[in-house]
Amino acid sequence: MSISYLFYADDAMFIGEWSDSNLKNIVKILKCFFLASRLKINIHKSQVLGVGVPRNLVTHASSMIGCDVMQKPFRYLGVKVGDCISRKTAWVDTVHKLRSRLSNWKVKTLSIGGRLTLLKSVLGASPLYNMSIYKVPKGVLKEMEAIRSKFFNGADISDRKITWAAWDKVLASKKNGGLGVSSFHALNRALLLKWVWRFISQDGSLWFRVIQALYGSSFDLHSVNQPSIWCSILREVHLLKSKGFDFITHCKKRVGDGHSTRFWYDNWISDQPLRDRFPRLFALETDKEATVAAKLGASSTDVSFRRAVRDGAERHQWSDLNSLSGSVSLSSSKDRWICDLTGDGDFRVKEVRNTLDDLFLPSQPDATRWVKYIPIKINVFAWRVRLDCLPTRSNLIRRGVILDSALCPLCDSTVEDIHHVLFRCDNAQIVFRRICRWWELDWYDLASFSDWYAWFSAIRFSSSLKLLLEGVFYVAWWHLWVFRNRSIFDAAPPRRSVIFGDIVSRSFNWCSSRCNRSFSWENWMKTPHLISL
Image (cartoon, rainbow, N blue to C red; front, side, top):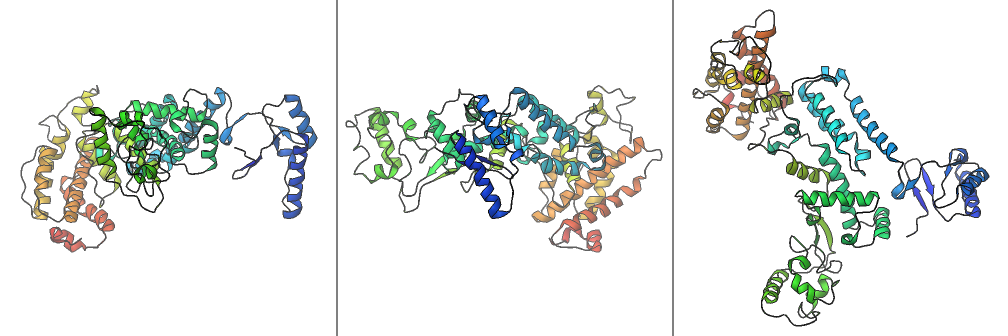
C-alpha cells in the first residue's frame, strides 16, 4: 500500500520517494499553504528522514531546504523507536509520573475511601500512552503496583509499613471478594488485544491496512518471530492462550447474508472454526475459502467435496455438521464480527481487563458486600474486617510484633481477635442489643461473622431497608474499632455511654444524604424499620 502523509494532533509527516524534486515541491506546497491560510510553517523546526538513503544525501537535502536531520529512527505506525536505553527511559518516565501523582500530602489528607477512588480513576489512566502499544516488563509492573499499594495503605513511598491486606486481593473484582481496583497487568494486555481485535474485525483503518500489507490478510499465518511491535503483540496472544485465555475464540462472526464469512475458517457457529471441529470433512473440501452463503445456498454442503462421504468417523461428522448448519437462517443484513465477552458484541478494554483479572487474580468464596448508603471508607473497613486484616493484638503477635499482653484492652479477659472486638466483648454486645431494640429485632449471642450473616439473612425487611440496616451495622463496627483505638492511644479515655448515640447520629447523617427518598430524624430515632425507601 502507499501512504503519502500522516497527520497527528500537532504534527504532519509527508512520505514519498526520495528525490530533490519531491523535497523542493513539498516546500513549495507549504509556501502555497501559507499564502492561502496565512499560517506559516517553520521550516527550520522541521526534520527530514531518509529510509535506506545514504547519510550524506540526507544531510545535503536538509541543508538545501533549510531543516534538520531526524536523529531517531521511525518504525511504521508513526511510533518512535530508539534503542533499548530509550525504551527503558520511557518506562522510567512512566513510573516517575505515577509516583509524582502520589505525593505525601495526598496520603496524609485523603481517607482510605478517597485513596481508593483516586486509584480507580486518575491513577489508573496515567500510564496508558506507553501501555497501549508495548508489553510492560514484569519489573515495571511490579514497581507500579508497589507504588499504588503503598498509597492505598497510607504509607509514604519510603516507609516500611505492615501491609494487612494482600494487594492482589485489593485488585480483584468485588464479585470475587476484592475492591475492584484492577491490575496494570490486565490493563496492559487488554490494550494490546484491542489491536488484535481491530485486525480481526477488519475495521478498514489505516492501521489495519498497514498490517495487512506487511503480514498478509490471514491472521493465522502472521509470524511471531520478527522483531516488530505487531509480532510482540501476537506473542503475548499465544502466551495468554497457554495460561488459559484464548482471545481468538471469543472473536466470532455473526452471520447475516453470509457473503463475507468463510464457512470453514471463521468462527461463526460454534466455539471453534468448523475446520477444527470437523477435520475429516475439511480434508475433503476442494473450495476451502467458500463462504457461508455459498455453502448454505448450494443443494448440499458436500457438492464441493472431492469424493462422497464414507461411513464411520466421516459419516458421524457429516451428520453433526448438517445438524449444526441446518439451524442457521441467512438474512439480508451484513455479516459482522462480535466479541462474546460483552453482551452487545462490541470490544471494550474494560470487559477484557475484567476477564483477565478474574482469571489471574485470587478469588474469595464470597463476594464483597457493598452498602451504597454509607461512605466508601466504611465499606472498605467492613471489607478489611471480614478478611481479618486489622491490627488486633492476636494479628500483631502473629506478625512478630512484641506486646505486653495479647488480652483485650477493654475487658482484659480474652485474647483480642476481630471476632472478640466486634461480637464477643461486653462492649460490643451492649451496643448490638441496643441496636436490636432500636430496630425491634430479636438478638442472639453471636460469636463470628458467619453467625451474624446467618442471623441477618433471616430478617424479613425489604431489600432496600435491609441494606440500610446492614449499613448501620457497618457503622457500628467502625465506631467499636475507633473506641478500641482511642482507649489504647488517647490520653483521656473515651466514654462508653456515647458510642450508641454516635452510631445513631452518624448513620443518619450518612444514610439520609445518600438515599433517594428523604426521611426525618424523628422517624430514624423511633421507627427506622418503617422507613419507606
